[in-house]
Image 1 (cartoon, one colour):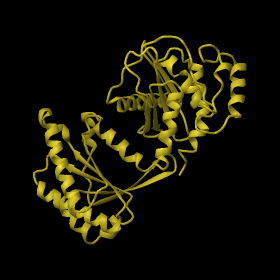
Image 2: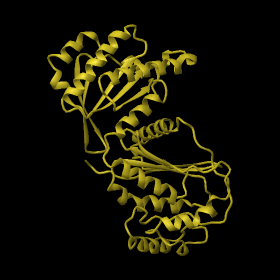
Image 3: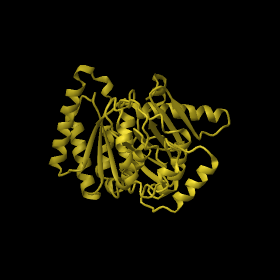
Image 4: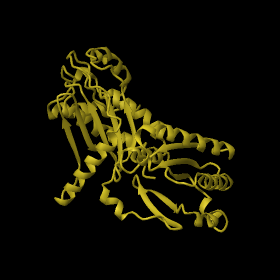
Length: 350
């Protein structure tokens, strides 16, 4: 989100502006930012058609919900779709219905759905099936959510990454695990385990299941009774045991279970949590920079849960949310450290 003062520095795009943005280290995004004024569209479709629309991986088209010339807007959109189909038929298409904050709250959903229906009809006319719509505003979490969704489409191995992230979440007895891109703190992927609110039996019930999954995990019998490690010798012994384990995604993960302790699960979740957390961490990183320090990570805790945020792979941070009080800080730190080299394989420096 932005403050009101930030918008005074924003200006409209004139004609075509070319930018390069680095994401996930060595993934360089070449952005062609095309102004939406009517005067520019003739050159887009005629003089610069092939230059702009050839070899496009991803198209982001922005509608202004306040526009008074809807028919012209959709004529331009139809022309863009035809140019994309001609020059880059495999491009993924994302449509932002922007400035939704200017629509009264009681009418917002109905107007958004109406505009989405018009967009879907236009895409169908142009035989475009691969598209996705977002209602957005710079004043709330919607634009952050849309950008996170968009950039994940540029990341290779995403399905494999999500599979391993879900396994890591379960093995850590966590409610949620989130991967953030290091520079932008956009969400890359997240995994959630749906426990029942107030569940006090899940640890005991899941203990055997976790051990079965963790074919390459440390044997829980080698850990203390509550599944945690205390001494440096214990840590060294467990690391040695983990190194000999099979590399099946759960390799070198120390679980916080089984245990017989009772506790109450934390309820899911603020729908806007990712953007809020991102803003908090980015502000804290700025504060660290002013103090000539580097941000490595943080831990936040209250009576209901603990959040571990730590530098993960070369280009990501990880956040792990845990409400089980039997999972100790040292255990979680070791899990994160041991998982790093494994996840580096699925988040390559492209």
